[in-house]
Length: 414
Image 1 (cartoon, rainbow, N blue to C red):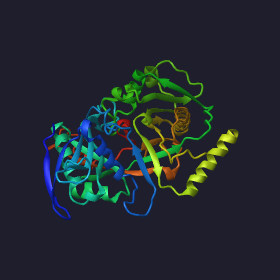
Image 2 (cartoon, helix red, strand yellow):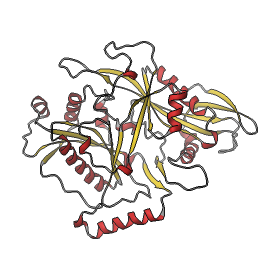
Image 3 (cartoon, helix red, strand yellow):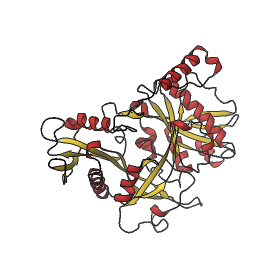
Image 4 (tube, one colour):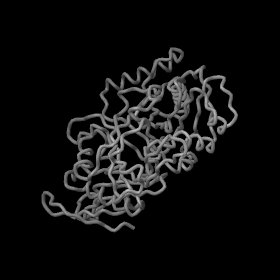
């Protein structure tokens, strides 16, 4: 059990005491969901209606960290708050965190092993609009970092959108984090019609053991590649790993493939976020909604025209996340595109509204990922060193390391 951390601030009429404690599922769920609603992404907080992205956690506030090796959720609670359950206490903020071991550096030279570090990830920091700029967020981050250190984490990192000035200011200005990586979230709508499979690519679904071997071979020196990739691939939410090679390529085994890979190839896995949470765009203008409906009607009436249709993003929708996207060779972007078409058709059968992935700015196969720019986002990852001293001489301080060409985004925390 987490030891409560009290703090005080002066409100409009009285002094309030804020206690940071561990989330209790049996009594806190409703209050946490209320805070989530108050903090809808894009909400203006004023009288003017604006579009916002609402996340429905399907009654499980832990869904975005539950599949991680070690995780914790904390809440900030006032001792004199007047809202909520009538007991003089009110939950006004929350934070989630998890700890895992990932690749933090390495070498592609033969015989060189990757460097692993124990890292912590902060996500889902929320503070009720009525209590912002009063130190609540900083207290939540600080208490979570205490648990990170107790768990042996050497680094802590977080992700936010680059234009989220308040979040960037909190972490870099008040919590000691530094800007680190800038991956892009690429999103593609799921059309009403199926996409035609590529004739120039052969796609094979790999068994989890085959996928693990291939990933450890290809991503050995890629930042944030999880040491427990076998656990990721075996999760029920992981719908499979798919390998694309030029049509006509002979397949014997994954071991033979790694010994003599074809000139070009690509790989990706599909994660079912739809069964963990749903998204919904709220506050959209009527004209935008009408235009989206029109595209779906045309696509449904004349699917042979293959007209791109906008899914109904204004009601709860699910997504499939594409992770472990990689490959090699001059034709790898084209093969990635074939895999994305395959994933699109999987998502269409699964009833999803979009497919998404997150890749680094210099990812070699990025050009092959189809996406709509207006649906995506530019992320900013910030990092902080928690441990004293340096355990890995060749790496030194990871926070100062230049970015690599690729980055591995763990689907368990997307």
